[in-house]
Length: 336
Image 1 (cartoon, helix red, strand yellow):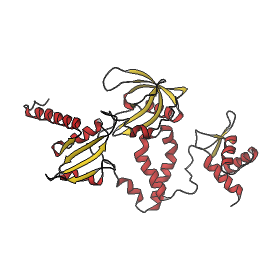
Image 2: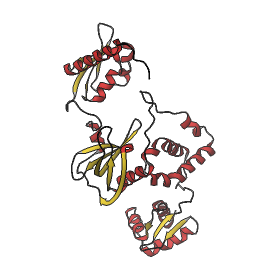
Image 3: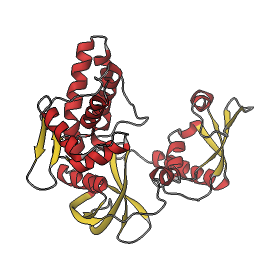
Image 4: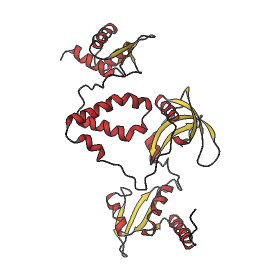
């Protein structure tokens, strides 16, 4: 294949879909980084040639002119989309749609359509794969809260473009407040989408449930960059969980054998140990984060788990069990 043909293929890959666009100068810079340096005149000539065979459009309303794939053009993949890639696009459409900016979802629609057409043409059963795969929560499924689509779009755009947001936020309890946020990340937990952001010029990072925003304005001011902030590291440190103690604790708990065996396959920690106790139960020892989430998880087992250590957690579990017992010893209240 000639160098000219290779350069043209790279150009087609670099051109975005409407409404985004790329100038001849920007194309030249990117081609040069890919090992295809050439002049602006040559790039312009190549674009004119390619636009006669591909649905490319030139926006000449202002300088520099910008080139795009037509928003109505069929998605083209160089090379063509294979069935594993098509399946990945279909699964992404099903499970990641709520995590993507609306503008990105719109741009991806041609690829989603092409993916389904590819699977239909393959006729090898992959089209039905997404109907045969499910992600299941351990708790009763919760319906997602309703989120205003326009507010969500502004939040996503602020995160995508690195711009500050003026918002009004209504917490679960308390009065509505105004915030000036610098978006740092986004996370989906159970049925709720959270924006992770800092307020004004503070370094503290907090999370905001999207459905509790009552107003969102996208500003032109750049978001404040927090040096060294890493979303994964923040989550790993327990950013989403209220901590009782900063340091991990050594959990020792005895589980009824039938419910404790799952921890042999899905351990709490890489340093977890399990032994059979003399009373027939499984004694699990592991370093864990001392969070509210840990308590909710343990309480879900009810009388099928007994916490031995740490002492403060055993005391809390005992007090919670006593409160629950007192609740059920009372006469049943009338419904309604």
